[in-house]
Image (cartoon, rainbow, N blue to C red; front, side):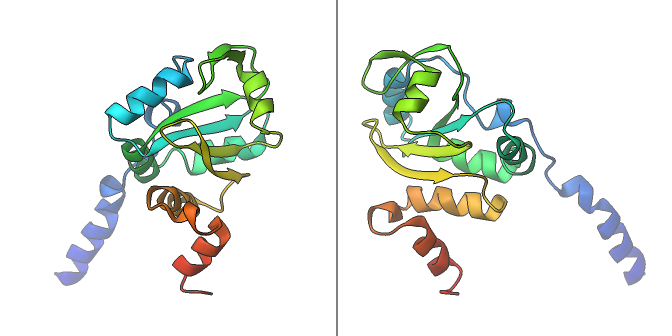
Length: 172
């Protein structure tokens, strides 16, 4: 009987596991194009700040992040709870308004923010000031969640992410 119950629990496990969700819907917010106005929204909603993912279509590391990390419900729920999140195309000609209220394009803004390699995950405080940055793909879900906690907990004020990550791993 115990074996049968264990087998049923094992077989039912995928039903309980959360399935990946489309990051375009569940991770990123719809783009309105006015980052300056989004700061007010972030303040009103009690967010820590704004997270921008600088990316481009043909970037394999961006694709990997979207299909292996940003599509995970745990990641989506955590980051959406603490940040407004937008994608910026480093080659995009779409007009946007930057954090200071200046009209620009995604491409010009990315250049100004020194987003040369992709992806770049750039965190901004509620005044639109850059506070933390991670270039490239993370090793996986755990490291990306750790990056989020690094910003949410304010550890970026006192140490670089690699030190925070080492401390979180028990100093290894």
